[in-house]
Amino acid sequence: MSRLKCAVIGAGYLGKFHAEKYAGLPDCELVAVVDNNAETAQAIAWKHGVRALTDYQELLGKVDAVSIVVPTSLHYQVARDFLLHGAHVLVEKPITVTVEEADELIKIADEKRLKLMVGHLERFNAALLGMNLTEQKPLFIESHRLAPFNPRANDVSVVLDLMIHDIDIILDIVDSEVERIDAKGVTVLTSDTDIANARIVFKSGCVANVTASRASLKVERKMRLFMPNCYVSVDFQNRILAQYRKGEKEMYPGVPEIVSEEAAYENGDALLAEIQHFVDCIREDREPLVSGHAGRRALATAIAITELLKQD
Image (tube, rainbow, N blue to C red):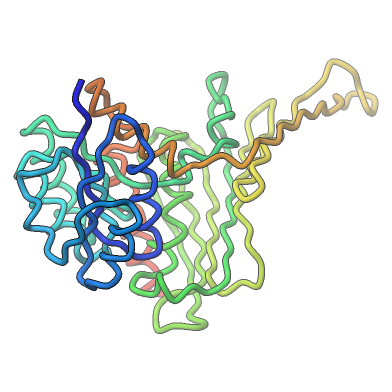
């Protein structure tokens, strides 16, 4: 089977890593890197021996697949153009600015039988992939995603920048409609929300308490899931999965002992795993782990939280 002709649109901090991964995959041919800054595009393209372009439209109809790593406000237009010209699309999160834009991208991809995948990178974290929740669904979830301020992400609120990672994971795990959301936020460093907390109540009865901050002095990415007979802790930052279950013995009369099990995962390459998955889905005609529908679902919930924060 011939190699897929691939291109990366947006050669900034994350885009350069996308280019590196495609260049290293044997079943892909990286043909171009695009950025509106010619010097930026040229620097990355020269490294991989490919074309450097400033206008992505020169590639329409000439590539099989693209990674779109441009500002969120441009996701819809760039993804739409490539889908309409027959290219499979991996677009960074959030999928678009509005739900209506996401709906149109999904519609085009479905009509043209193309893969539309959203880059929620945390789904490929080894600790999360090692978790098995087939036995029972969680009743309560608590997540904390804290990070120092990063000027590269100040075009969106902390909800669309950081919290959306956990929103996506929680929606996938719970797999139930949202019944109610309460949210509070604080402006600290920017004119937008920098610290936010949301309480998501699902129709299944599960409740998720989600906190995100981009005004922290430390990095923390943790999620805790509570089930009737089990408690699971996922440390995304250090790739540690810990599980605590009721044992057969008693630690006090009438109180069962708690048996713990912990697994630490090596520092894998989540971005490489994500892009390889995207390529495999194209080759094998499979639904991506984070489909356009999943990206739309996370976006809709993030927007609902954002609207509540504006009312606060």
